[in-house]
Amino acid sequence: MNFKERYGPWAIVAGASEGVGRSFARQIAAQGVSCVLIAKAGPLEEVAAEIRAESGVECIAAEIDLSAPDALDQIIAAAGTREVGLYIANAGGDAAPERFFDAQLKEWVRVTNINVMTTMQACHHFGRLMQERGRGGLLTVNSGACYGGGSYLAIYTACKAFLLNFAESLWAESRKVGVHVLTIVLDKTDTPNFRRMLERLGQPWPSDAASPDEVARIGLERLPYGPIHNWGLADDEPGHGWSPASERRQRAAAMSDAVELLYGKEVK
Image (cartoon, rainbow, N blue to C red):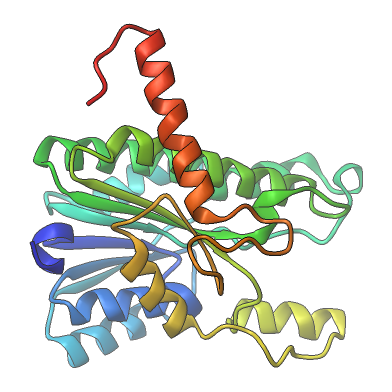
């Protein structure tokens, strides 16, 4: 299958108003796949118009707060009867720079809803339909924070660790039924949100920040291989305490086979 046959005719990009999400949407549309763009705010309509003009595909915008308890219902309503073959969960880089007990609980619930609950619910809804069709893709944009915790990062790192293990498990379950699963683990990336954060903290801009366009390109390129791509590293290369993607892939496959055998189920 070509890209459109594998991941079309529609894709949903959550967190599409700028940065990496916008780059994903533009590159997906360039492959002939129509897009539903989702974000809480930002120039969504402008991005949709830009994509329609440069790619000639259908592109609609839906302003949705992904932290809301009914976010999935709103996403499903935005998709309507469209057949969604690709779901990109890019929203989730919203970390409060406070210690766990210093912030209000509602702030941590909000961050968890964006990163975990809405992503899990959307992957369940659209992923089940993809499995029935025997094709499709689920891609989550992750952070190196997924590999360990630290001060000021309790909930953020916990959420990103969830995405890491979630992707490995979904990949293990979907690897032989035609649905591709990937979490792309990023380091510093040149996004408006990252620039705003550094400006707020009075920190200098790093010269080695990754380009959003390159992140999207590599993410889509690595999606068929799953379940993890560590940004800037080869498949078998560890870095900064990260496990090589190839090692974690083998571990996820072995664990899946062992558990399915234990439960008396035939490995599919």
